[in-house]
Length: 195
Length: 198
Image (cartoon, rainbow over all chains, first blue to last red; front, top):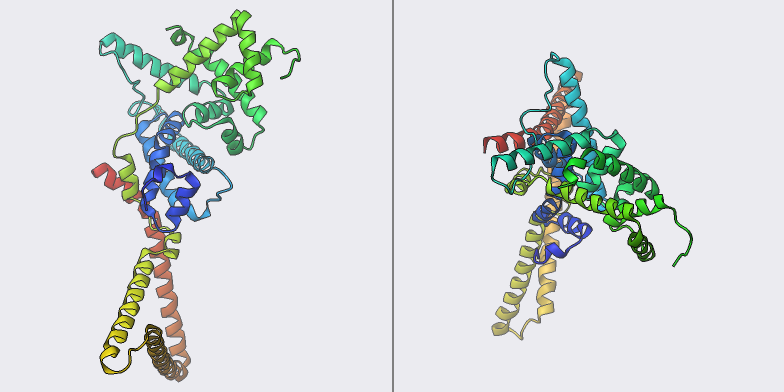
């Protein structure tokens, strides 16, 4: 019965899971895990935290699977839940920082980005690390609404239509904000774009 | 295809849309024509492609056992009870048993009397099930009546008996609700702990 599940649409997979084929949920997880973890990572700036939160998001979705409305895209629902979870996490983190002595930023340090390196030399490693940090800084430097859209588009890999549905924005606004966001990113990453 | 005059900033927006595959065929064709003579847009397009590649290359690889971890910590969802596999298995078992019994009755009858037709065997089984259901219902009624009498005896004796039983029922309900809530909260914590220990 599970044969050919990779060809099923998201809505068909959900329907099959609800009919008792719970193991098919792994297909949905595999389909979205990379995009979800990368999306959360770019918002939270901490890889283990992003993976933990991605897992929680999948569990939350599984629990509420019978409330999924197939008239909407599964990806839109998934990223809406993820977005709310990320905002809650950032809020919690701020509260923890406020309650702690303000001696350091708990969000940096462990779990920071390491750019995948194809160059094994020390110079290559350094360059890759610099590049990874520059990307994160460029994203962090964007105003929140641009940042959200850039992360949804480039790391969540959502289409313009999906982003418009998720954010409840007209398509033109999404295009315009992405255009401006990318221009800002280009300016900040100019050094790496010349390579 | 539209032949209207398009300003430079529109072409620049189109470059972004093109990278995302969001242009119509007509727009793409107009943009291609524009790129033939506009150096600024050519540079812009090249930068956009590089930016796209730079961001794509920076994607984090998810650890190999992520999916297994998610599947291992799936909670019991409310909707699962609506389609439990055990019901299907039980239903299949009943159908097989009924079919087997019907076949046996039908073949056993062949040696004694004129063969019992298969339909007759099914009717016999249905009548047997009907009788069993009637007996079961009778027993259930009798036991409920017995329980009712016992409660009447217990509660009707004194107002304190009634209060004590009510308090007991409330306490048990309260404990059950608390246990269920605590289980619900513990599930994600447990999953995280088992992952870090693993």
